[in-house]
Image (cartoon, rainbow, N blue to C red):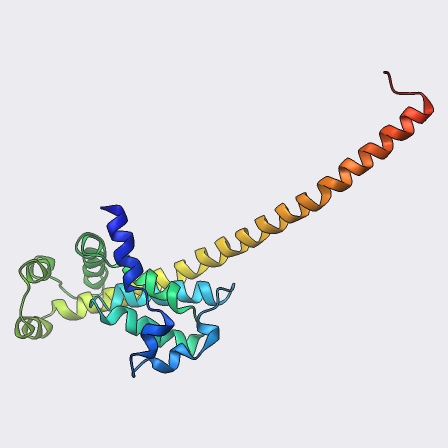
Length: 203
């Protein structure tokens, strides 16, 4: 089951070839900086993916929306696309929507979460969603999702930046350790040779 989920996620990640076939986002494929993994593009991609994934919970539009936002912010497109998958059905129903309703209610609105979950469960028609959008619950959840998405984007950017920095420092320490090891051995050998010459090393 987990391997199938991974394969599905990989199939949804946009590639340059896929973008080139889409006339709306084809120019993104020609931007090499949007495909590089650097200390700036990766955290930005995480932030964009979290924001779009939480706020724009529409399958199919999330990846395209994240890819388009990567252009002005010069973020990594694959990372942004993968991060949008944070809004899976379980997380939407049990995490994001309840949290958004709670946030919106604190601003004086009233969100009936049972109506939203019922719409999602039975696949409500666009007309039903439009009618619901005129109620007091729509602005509550909309405002809640915006604030929640912004908070997740900021937190994701901070965490990704620190992880990237730790990763770079770890690699640097490993390289330095590998470079110092032969020097230490050589120093030890020369010291031993000196001691042997001085007659201070026991046989």
